Length: 75
Image (tube, rainbow, N blue to C red; front, top):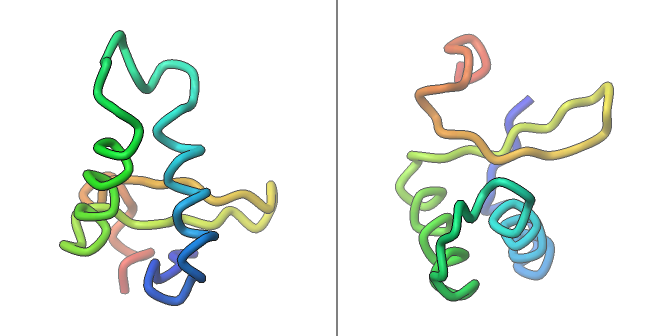
């Protein structure tokens, strides 16, 4: 299930993005400031390049690139 990012409270969205960009394996030695990484993800969500996917089984949200999400989820 996709969650429209603009329906989330601002603080909730920020925490979700921060969690995503600070996970193990996401920085790959990147020294880019947290604020910059969060802004990049926020822009990708605004442009529709990234989406928020909610997994009902695990009760967790993930960020994903739109082109990596099954087409039927986008309809």
